[in-house]
Length: 345
Image 1: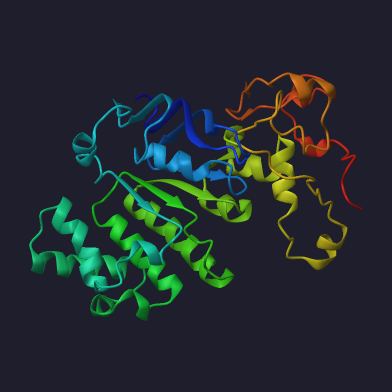
Image 2: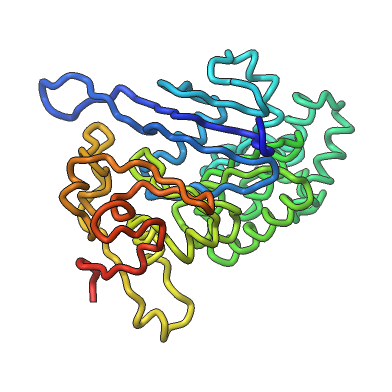
């Protein structure tokens, strides 16, 4: 791949067969990921943000080839891995690691911390028992724990400490890409801050690429170089972390940002909040036109019938929204420039 691209998804779609929920009705098709194209550059951190059910975790599982795409292509390090079988993928597992949201569930409670961290070293690196045990101690110290933790069990550690153990275990095989799926959502605010700082330090030290998945744009902003915003299976906006955070181009991104409280009470008191009405539509019945129009305060008639194209701007950012081509014609400017008809006072 060119331009230092490490991983790429091109027009990836993932469908699941599910029950419709209506008596007498047959199975339905849920579109969890719909025509998603993303690339992750070597050594960069790409944030993927959106509400629960938007398809973020499915993108992660597709990228790691834990599930197969319905259509589209997945590439890693210049190789098309879309159709590799389990044995062929095993050779790449050392380069692609993950830390999942359920930290406790990913750590075997019957194994000590030392055994858990040493396991991938023995499997992927071929280290002997003693060498793997010693390396496990060094990895634990790298993530801010002590080598003495090797003799403890997961239930003896706090949530933040277990998160660090999962991170040490993932980093043991020196991956080129680390997928972090809601890795800090279960932690308290102070522990989240420590984890975010640790991830930044480790990325600088190890030159590993991150796909950082979360629903909190505030956290993603501090971890990521670029941010992709996902809604109902599709990428609706992508740009640098600073641009997406300060100058959102899509109304959905603007609404996510407005939900983040400001630390200054005087600013928070007068801050404009955008309250999205209605529920996220079902992936078995995605709305026609723009999939966000049923909840968008700026929705126009064209939004209800015409799917917006994905526009690419000179700064490399993209957005899929009719506001940039019809109506007020933002042409890439921030949606913050518009008044919000349905905003709460």
